[in-house]
Length: 512
Image 1 (tube, rainbow, N blue to C red):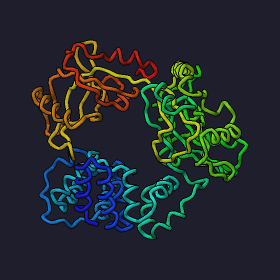
Image 2: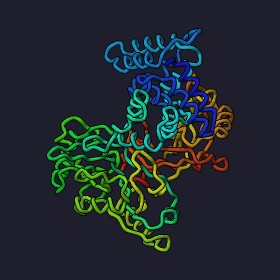
Image 3: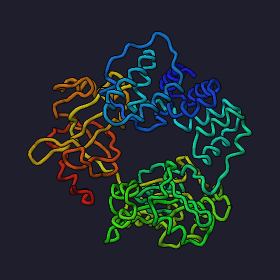
Image 4: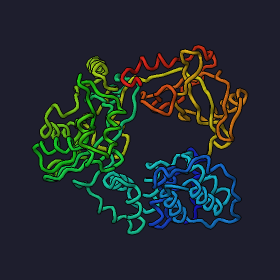
């Protein structure tokens, strides 16, 4: 498949808000694609590189390259060159990356160059999400959408299901079954603004602690244990204490869903960054386990003794979990009978926050396990942190944000009256807000390098964020987690913005 065709569909998908039209466009594209193209086409549509980060930044992409007159690049040729790029390392690597990027862009038309630049910088966000791609794939192959969704859930990969479907037709879906040892995509939660809202929507439900740990799926087959992350990476070798805990359970074959989290000597959870650092560490695992031990906390059972539990109501799945897993290894919960019992849910939330956790997940008791989906029967509730910060600079956007100042550099006041940068965000920006902030920030501009525009620190913006973590990249030693724009506060002066000291006082667990 030509890259030009993929770029065209990406552009057309971005231009429409109608889900039915997005599905039709993707179905047409999948009919044209070969089975070998699909593992590349699907992540490209979602703005992802199969190779992950490949070390190409704005410095390399900013160099002008004469575009090709006619499209000749195939998606497989692009993928092969990006794989080569990702392997470049050592002396002279920067020059070699620049050469390979020049080779790629020189073979691309102007439209293809724009698409590739957006893809490499993470600016391809045209709404071609996996859920829409599943519907398009079903339409393209004549397979029932529900069966395609389930196959993707069980395979843990839309690409592998798509390749099988396009090669062998709907009968290929029979190959995808829940199997101990093969991870499935986890069920995810939507957000609710309060426990009252969540309970009102779900009725009889369980209210469970929401732990700020790392999601894991634990598979045991006899004496063999495998541990996978929510992205299905195998991290078994990094977590010997989790393997040991799984081997202590009575069952011989099971799949359990839960989190790993690290607790301090006082019994309170350590910061997410410490847990994530431990789980991510591949060096001297024994020493890491001794200094930052982690504990598994399970909240669901997907398979026990070769019995597939996915379609059972949550209440029955939890009964199987409770039979298999002792209470100290299960997430804390309380049962609520319905909206008339909201006070119990509120009490449990308050107690959970007091214990140092980030909130609760409210789960309908009669819902099946919707792996790989944000099910309406799981609703997470956690306090929203907000700050009033000052815009210090902004970056020119790409893709649909081309010509707009997009990624904001955010700063908090310091004791000496200056501003310390805490991170960046382009989340939460509507098209109208992008247009407004571009005009406003250009009025405040004091300089730039062609990519970043520095501005006078006068514009205050309200930012929501999920938490704080340590970072050596920023002068305050911390950065915001999942920051997004709520609104601009033109009614506030920069002197009224929040301070670094206020922020650190609110998050003592991550004080540098």
